[in-house]
Amino acid sequence: MQSRRILALVLALAALTLTAAACSASVSTGSSARPSSGAGKTYTNAQYKFSITPDPVFEQGKANDTSAAGSSAVFDIAFADANGTKVGGSTVDGVQVSVYKLTRVLKASEIPKLKKEFAGVVNQLMSGLTAGKIVQPLSLAQINGVPGFRLAYTFKKDTTEIAAITYFLIKGQYEYQLTGQASQQTWPALSPKLESTVKSFTVQ
Image 1 (cartoon, rainbow, N blue to C red):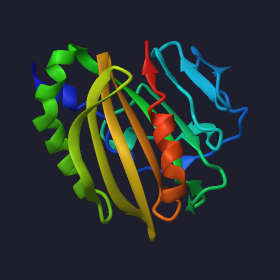
Image 2: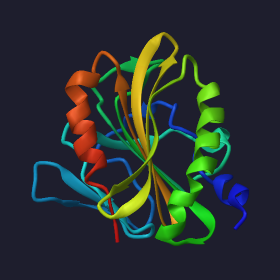
Image 3: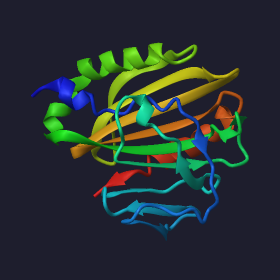
């Protein structure tokens, strides 16, 4: 397997802010939202076979364009706290999901072997963030049976200090990147909601 070909399609870390949009914002064909058993609403994307249940504080919005980050996602969506921290008019508190198509199907047994390559990519990307610092290094992780890697880090957007956790999850021919982030000022209050949102992520 040519790791570089696969890793070229991995999403750059979500240092981009999330733009809140009205709840009635349109979504891509094949996507739908349905009520969950809890207070939040489960968002389901039939095309890319994933679901996520955001905490009610996060409104469905449109993710910023990530094409400049080095590889183009086939799908992006964000769930942001419209009343949260603003930087340059954009909300930075929330969760973003980006989907990338890999060059071939990966088996679960192959994923741990990619840690060295992912670590190299992470180091390069962190060097591109303002005051980027790894808080918890890249480690093997899984969410609801979907394997991958987890990274916790901080950086600055303008003068705002931001904390973030990113999961790189792989199933079949798709890589799903989930990032929960918030300003360090709002992180203590929002981190449980960010965590519950991210850990609600499932892939069919």
